[in-house]
Amino acid sequence: MVGLATDIWWPVLAYSLAGIAFLGPIEMAALCRHCPHYAGVGSRLRCIAPNPFPKLFPYRPQPLNRIENSVVILFSLFLLFFPSLVEAYGIWFFFVNGPEFALLGMVGVNLATAMAALQFGYILTRHFCSRCVNFSCPLNCVPEATVVMYLERNPVILAAWDKGRRMSERRKL
Image (cartoon, rainbow, N blue to C red; front, top):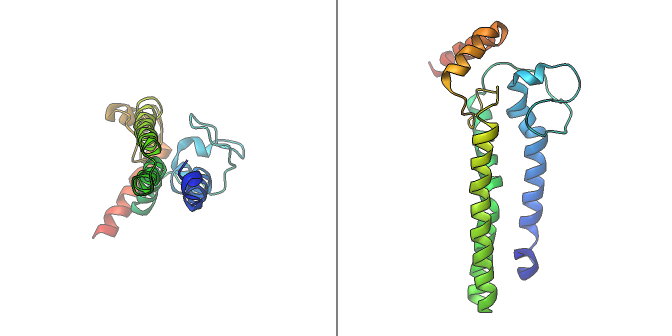
């Protein structure tokens, strides 16, 4: 709507490219390749997330490092809140240039977009992140007892996690 009203289309292009990049190779490199499902047989990832892209990177069972964690958080925040920021620009545009009914419509759309982003975040963390085995993801909310039990039953992943933790502790020193 903002693109139609202002004839400024770069936000739509930027959001589309960021979405394709993050939900494709960037997410795969920063997040997915740390997941035990990524070690599975085949050229495609099979997990609870709808990811149609092929496996592009080698499996890395260690926890996410700081850069990967930051990438996941920043891209997630961008994808959730960028539309509301662009719509806030649309509100300002209609406030300055009128008409008032368009301003009220843009305020309503912005509120609906913000509510949809919050609802998406809630559904994601409540129904997907609470069941995901990629425990180093910053959105993962699996109970600690379940994580411990899972790692005890998967000694290869536990060993990789311990190795990853030791390496990150050495880097801090």
